[in-house]
Length: 283
Picture (cartoon, rainbow, N blue to C red):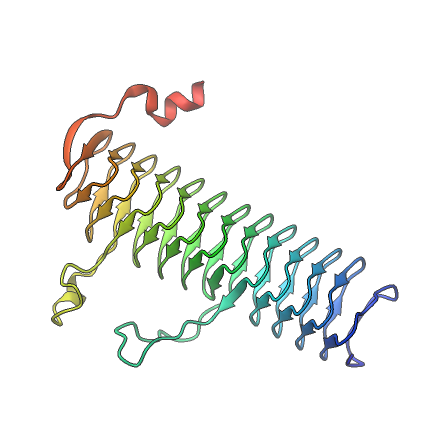
């Protein structure tokens, strides 16, 4: 079913059961799989490719060369940057929902998700509204990125990793598989976070009203590295080029360019000079 107000190129072949609503605009060279639904005002740039059963929400924009896997859902007003690749069953621009007993309350209307050019989003990944991905961000299969986050250029979010709401992540930072970044955290540039690292923001473990005055995410400064399975307690700061050993429980700040490990983690030595970022750039 094609609305007569839709603007389609003459050479476009629409497969069976395609629905194109009013004011949709599709540029040259696009290919659509069967059972796609393009809602009112959606825009497809030149050379966009959609798998089967794709839903494009009202006013969403797919820039030139975007490719979406089958069963992808793009929520209203989401913008996907040119040349981006999105895997099957991904959800882009989802609005948050909360349980009736949740302490996380709605904060008003969220702006749409914006993805820069050259991003990759894996199969079954979910990225919420209000978030911004800069160019060439890589989000692996099954990852989740909540609302009001900002990921800078070339950030990598590994398979099954979770980035909660109101998190900023700096350029070229890498989160490995199953990492959990708690809400209200700040990660600067060129950080490495190994698999299954957990960060926390509530020392009161969801008890007492006082906890709301002290809830605070972690701060990871540029170039620091966190070993696999480490746990960072609320408000902990890891200094520039510092290293946290695998399996550590970090209860206090780790100074710049120091190595700390253990339960609780304690500083044991300086970061080896050959491991500093400045040394890598020279080699």
